[in-house]
Amino acid sequence: MSSNSISPEIEALTIVALGRFNPAIFHPSWFSKIHMFSETEINQALEEFKGVVHKDITDFQIYWCRFVVEPTRIIVTTRMDAYFERLRDLLYATFKELIHTPITAVGINPEADFKAPSRERWDNFGHRLAPKDDWHEITGNPGLRELIIEDKPRADKFTGYTQIKIKPSEKIENGIYIHMNDHHSFENYKLEDGAKHLLEVLEEGFPNTMKRWEKIHKHLTSLI
Image: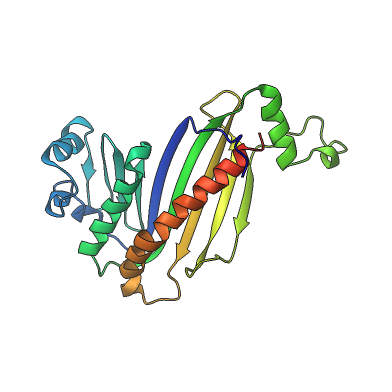
């Protein structure tokens, strides 16, 4: 791996679980019972950020994460890299308590924005990933808007795939956005066992996902 990789300017981690959920039970105060939120964080979620708890959706946030529950999916996000593991721990503790929740899949989604040293190198990176020679006959000024690479089947014991998305950053001038969806499917298991498999992914798979993410973005940014 090249030592010329670029450090991220902006980072985030989102974990998405698919299944059948009852949004109303995910009240911020419930998380104090599993020792994941302090009273200060609960008050912040309900008062400062005006969180919503309803039978159709729960949506609240505290300073380090956002927690959204819909009837068919849960989305938890942090934009602070120091809290990536705590986000994993939050979801792990939640479904260790709600072990019979029907869950069909989980995706671990790290993402980051990187700044190219110059516009020329930003352009050259896009040309390297998607050469334009074959496009000049049918377009006037071709440019890469989005590239998605899928790695399937998985190389580990889990079922699913990994997708890597690259596109121009919407937040940084001469920036590059890289996103990875490390998707784990539980379709071959009983629905009522889904939470158990989620815990297995979070415990065993999460560290490997984050190591692979680091390898991927360091390799790609070394090409800039």
